[in-house]
Length: 222
Image 1: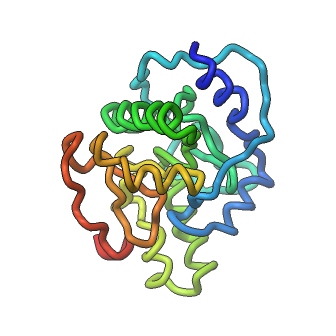
Image 2: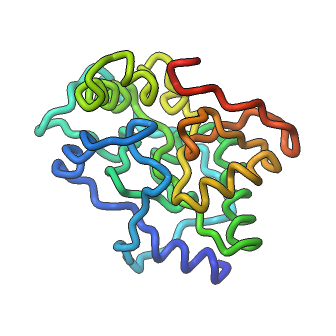
């Protein structure tokens, strides 16, 4: 394992998922779960590191009913693709939020993360990836409470039927320096910023080296 990747893995282990962390999602700000400043330097679990050489392509367990409400007894968890507010993942982690992504998208994120670290010393984190329908529905309901109306909430959070996170076709990048690195260099890997108001949200939109379309205003413009 390359030294840079080992250090990145040691620094950015997934946060522990707790009911208290679920409640913190109510303080969302952008892309419904976490913005480009997301990230934690706390976890330093020294267990065996993930294999950097492969994209597993294993889908998360989706046997649980998507109609199951989010409550204290049935909180969001790893199987929903949940990442706590302010938390972040190493792009190479073997967790549903990442393995549930489209395999070509995840491979492009891996390539871009390696390039960002090698070329500019920038460590790329993933603040949100694949989400279950019930996770996305919870975020939308929460956003309505935060922003005061369905119209304003829709600028930041798509419904589960429209969300590219639910289909595994979108990834949120953090921290801010990494998100802006993706804005500049992402097209080399086919990765494009989707929404003008979300510097952190990227999708595999063009062929590597292609020209990205201009971002649309916000999620409600889709």
